Length: 244
Ligand code: FPP
Image (tube, rainbow, N blue to C red; front, side, top):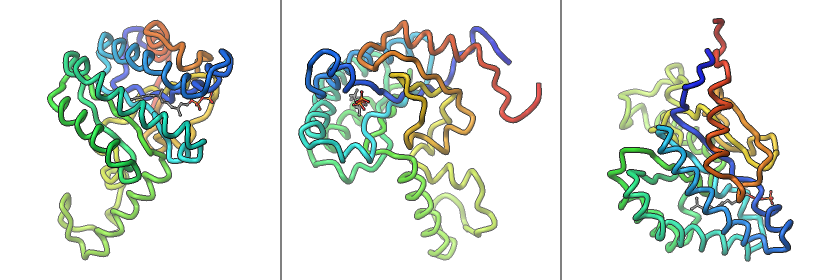
């Protein structure tokens, strides 16, 4: 049912268009990524103000390692610098930082900066900011399948349930083996820059998400743009495969 005041519990964003934004200004691509920090702050402010409880940002995909080394290095440096510089404000706003994706491929430095941000914001109760880093859905689902298979191969002894019988594997078993096990599915997925695809992002979790593709490039995304996404969401009629 459409309800003008309905607020999504979980918003996920594919922050796209940094490279095009930089090119349009005759700048280097990394400058586009650096200009993408202010929209992260703006989205957080708008999410907190509107009562959104979870905000997931697709910051680095497993495919992004294939970009030029200079761009990858500048992104790693940007992650480190911004988690350090933003942490006090995140704590002040009651934001808890978490991560999905495989950390093992990151350098020791990146891992320690991310771990520090998670520790220092662990008590945040207002909003959970989930950074998707070295993340892709297919990799996440593959790792989940491996976890479930390992539990079955181990003879049914596992931490979460006493016995794992293949016939008892259901959607909940899969959801609980994903990186997002602790979080609700996204209600709204936004991708900036006018591209209309999910690019390996939250494919399982997106089953009933509303999708919104504004034309704006990520560095130009503002609090007002976030509010517009929420207004568009409130107009949608979500039926989850049922009838009214
Ligand atoms: C996609 O635009 C954007 C990225 C691959 C990086 C996004 C990262 C940030 C905005 C930094 C966020 C930092 C934190 C700590 C959350 P693109 O380069 O693919 O743009 P294009 O399609 O125009 O080339």
